[in-house]
Length: 142
Image 1 (cartoon, rainbow, N blue to C red):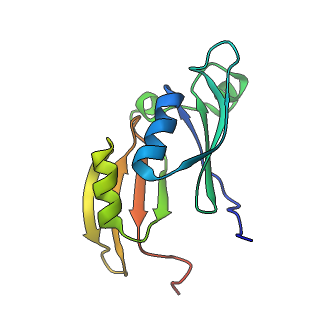
Image 2 (spheres, rainbow, N blue to C red; image 1 turned 120 degrees about the vertical axis):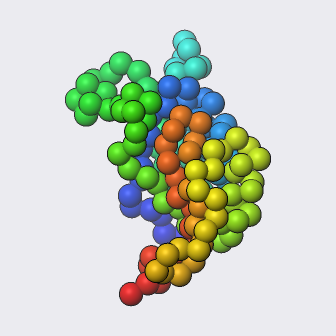
């Protein structure tokens, strides 16, 4: 049995259905669960996407108690990002090529990591969240 991730990033998107399609096509996620609004399928209350034994959760950016409580902003509203999601991949060069062909904005093309092993590349998803894809496995370091 695969061990599952204990830390699960949660994201908000203005167009969550488009983000789900993009994340699956460009970055290799698969749908684990998607709960759309009964009256408006353009609103995603909650979605879970997986790659390997790792998961992200996302939903539609909309007025809600949690948006108000946490002051939740999309990258566009924040005029930047407050975090970057790092994901291990076997071949950053091939992954970058695939992601770019499926609409990802490659911020920094594949490069050798400065001062530590492996290769990486950085990309934006369709709403400006930054993703770092790397062959460097921090669990093996040290």
